[in-house]
Length: 457
Image (cartoon, rainbow, N blue to C red):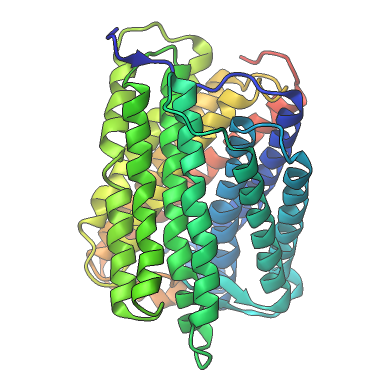
């Protein structure tokens, strides 16, 4: 153990905050369940063995829209609700409850819209949409709930002070994550006000969500970094990083988001210069702080500290998260043109964030008043999900090398060679394995919720 070793974890909080955190957990779980059902459709629609058994075209794209919005937007915001609630004070609890209710209503409308509406899918980056009034209203209502959550979290955020311990550093990191959240809100509003009136369809939504979508990536990165440090400490390890160095990493992960309002001041949202600055800022902020915190977490696990049986699921989630995020990041350097290497890249990074948050959910279940997750199944779920996603991403990367286009399915993929068919077959098999891992995660969490206060083996 070094003198700089630190315990990064948040202490227990007021029971009222735990109750609200449970509500945000339920919203995230329901979103994952809906997303998991739709992901089965997506994988089968692309797998060569099954793609002819399912309708393609809009059927695939409608499922993809709702899958992405539930598994990324709703799930991550819900986990933000947990983290910002537990790290803040008890001020403005009513606003937090209202944010949860409004966000839940918006999620419900978005989930129902494919079954009761007739809107066409628009595959815009970051937030794809269905051009249907029910879906649009659901997205707007969910956005209003998210704005309320950010507003309440700003009110309840701890007063600024140089961190003295790991808990202070995590609180400061989560508070810093509110800065890109405010930037995202301003960017969405700025794009809505400045987007040319004659634009429609994908061109309109692409510009509308581009700036704010970039800002959201900074928030997800902070959540992942906080989870890495917290999980490493929860594995009975002392992390070889001082609170101040951790704070510096959190600053690096968020300060580049300030380039987004600068881009809006210098160029209109639809210009190439505007888009290029945002892309550069995201790459810088999403890259600089990753390596030091990842290395600190890995060194902590190698410190020789004994690992309790209950910490094995946390270690599995931590290692899987780091591996998948780095895999996705490396794929990003190989992208050339518009093909399925692009979803391979962001799937790796997004799955890295998801695995970290899944591990954190396992760790927080007892603190929220629920039972311990089943150790063996919880450990297996992370490795299963990670291996499946690695196969899924690897198949996409291999297919992208042959020019297979993104956001298409079935015959639209125009798979010609044996290698292309094999690559997409690996993608489909990996996707199914990942779905199994995700379903096991949901079942493990639901069983822990059912068995409040009881240990599981």
